[in-house]
Image 1 (spheres, helix red, strand yellow):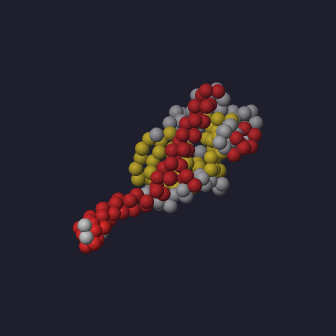
Image 2 (image 1 turned 120 degrees about the vertical axis):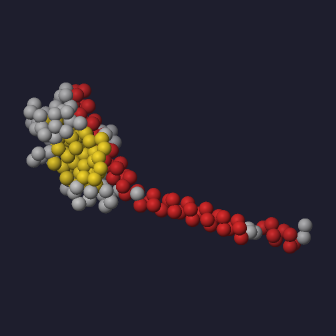
Image 3 (image 1 turned 135 degrees about the horizontal axis):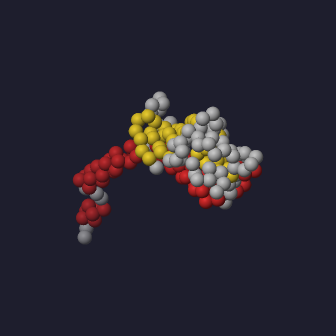
Length: 191
């Protein structure tokens, strides 16, 4: 084999280069829009976490036949699962146990990088920022009460999406709806 023939075998043809560039261009067009949705996916992850923790608090109240509360702290962008006793709701003394939480307390911070820029926007349960579940998992008006509450909602948002988690009166059913950034509801779903 002479030098001219070996030089031809080392390079790529123009057609091969064009095919590779075209494939990379198509892959780029598929990936770039997905990167824009990362913010929405992170806030959806935060919403799923809040829903799962609300459900856990209901189940824990039912299992132990004791009231449980979820106390939302919008200012600090976190919430705490709390055992309710005769003194009321004290997140410092009665936070549920979580082996992965700070000081073993069941505190969830949405400032966690896994949730991106998710924020607790509103926690509205009547005039309170907490929801109490009775021994049957239904929402009640406050600690030690057996009067059913009217439920309430929590909004979790990011820069591109906002979701409302609603806890129904009497049953404690949890639903999630996408909310327009200006405050109106756009689409719904349930968990």
